[in-house]
Amino acid sequence: MEKVAYSSQETSMIDYGKTFKHLREQKGISITSAANGVVSKSFLSRFERGLSDISFDKLIRLLTNINISAEEFIYLAHYREQQPLEFHYEETKDYIGPKESVKRSEKIDHYLWEYRRTKTSHDYLNYLKIKSHYDQADPLTIEERQFIYDYLFKIETWTHYELRLFMATLDSFSSDQVFLLTKQMVKNGSETIDVNWNHQADFLYIILKAALMMALAGKEKELSTLIELAQQSIHNQQYLYEKSELHFLSGLRLCLRGAVSEGRQMVRKTIQVFKTLDAPDLVTLYESYWQSFLTANPAIVKSNEFKE
Image (cartoon, rainbow, N blue to C red; front, side, top):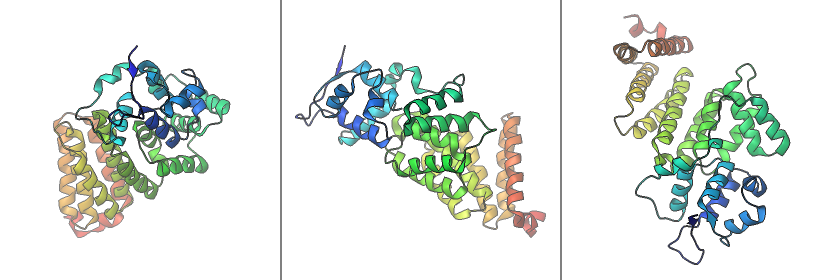
């Protein structure tokens, strides 16, 4: 079995153990939980201190225990050692186990049972994530929302796990909290955004959804900040839908700035694009967004430009 080779005495080699320890501690996961079912606690401790090598298959299994993909881990390890990669480790996806993604067939009770068994903050976050995503009849409590907010606001390195946690719970937060967390995501997640296209897509999805929340809340300044961030993130031709959404949001921003006629025209053009693409569900969705925006900002409806 191929080994993950590194030595604390060789500056040219990557210190994978040190990176693993940093990410594990950032996520608040104990060394016992991280080692569970893969290696002993003492072996993992030695690996983190640079005293033992580890086989690649065991490292992948350890990464699933702390919700880090192989490509993210390798990318971050090189980033921390100031040896940035010139290409992405897409091939490591072949080694990622099924534990990394949440299956719809898994029940909320399973995550609750796991948390009650371990009493760790990591398993509590997993439970809250799946509860928020699948159980709309039982929304997160104030205390549960605060726990997630504190975790996301304090963690220094956002990986795909944090992106998905925020995506699953975003609707639970106030517009002010969403804006602050989105800025934290941009600040602390920029290291991993270029790992693969899925990361980029999730990153952009959150910015755009947060921007819509700002528009519905009538917060033009915050909306402008997020629109600018989205424009910086859309850098290729794969984002046709996102570009259309950004056009729609720019129309809402114009309305908030008082240029109602011009803004409404941009909104109509976006909806027309979806009609041209024969996407009736998107037409319905964005028409509902527009109506919600007008309901939330009645001054726009009363303006002379709107009546023209």
